Image 1 (cartoon, rainbow, N blue to C red):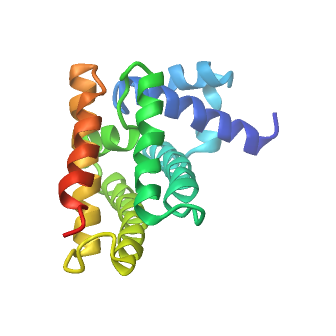
Image 2 (cartoon, rainbow, N blue to C red):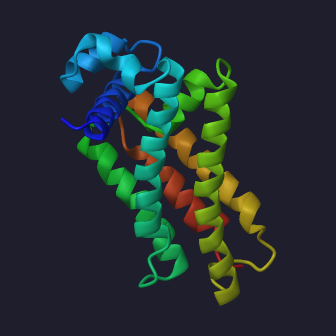
Length: 195
């Protein structure tokens, strides 16, 4: 494999294993075996495990932003429909995974924020990007008169994403999709309800 393809294979397999087992519980040998890469070559691609972890966060960020672009920036839908599509995409993905794994971004945030400022900083950037996409939908919805004019788009976007991540954690605990449905229903029937 060309060098860049090998690096990407390590990141993809590492991301899959980290999602299943956590960053600290995933060994480099497990990652390299899964990627089909010789055990001694990890440091040819990454300075250390933390640098690899940051590359995994970027991998997750790319996937999450692709979903955000596909749903939250879909100009063929009204703003609140876009937000609903965003939630629906992940609800379907979690159901397909039988409610296992949870959100890889949320998992890494919980595991690594107290242990690594680099991880925390990168996760904070991703959080801001996603809440920014949500806030954009809310600004448009407010301009259309779909939600109350007094609603602060940025703070509400933070609340929405925080609530969604909490619901994912509850879903993971109960192995039931109901927390996601409850979160979505509360957001649309109370928080985002037109006055």
